[in-house]
Length: 223
Image (cartoon, rainbow, N blue to C red; front, side, top):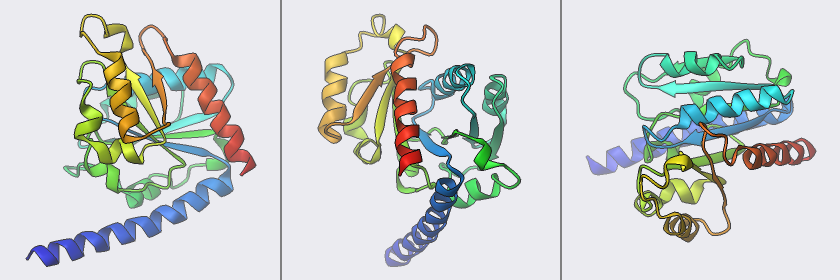
């Protein structure tokens, strides 16, 4: 039975990886930079993305989002208030997004008309780590309310991430957040990773994050 489960999982991941490669080629051809945002529930991922979309649009960038959730379109409606095009993906119990889900929800979308496409993954630190969505950049988010040892408990996600974002930094004091310990743990798992300390509420760290996105966009366009 165990062997059969392993074989089935390997088959699913192989199919997903093949679809993800096709998506990556499609995104590259369209010239859109795709970022996959992954975190646990309650990290403030939606608030962070909402602020990001608003700030990008204010700068004249063309940005959109795909939002993954088990049920409801609450986050999608919230993000759409930013003025960016948003589509909801309901997984109906599945704890992660898959390349096939992303592909289905891109139908009829003019990707060439976008500079950035953000994929807000389902709130989970385990399953999304194994599924490539064709993104150019994977971002792991950690809030000051979660504890500094999250990277050590969930190393696969942070090890596979291209950047890390610490959210709700405005609450660091009341939460007695140990900033140095968090940074040490993140970099122990992924040496050299870019880390951004942000607050969607106050705007702290957002300028640095947006500059990073701009750099990625330029680099991506030239590749």
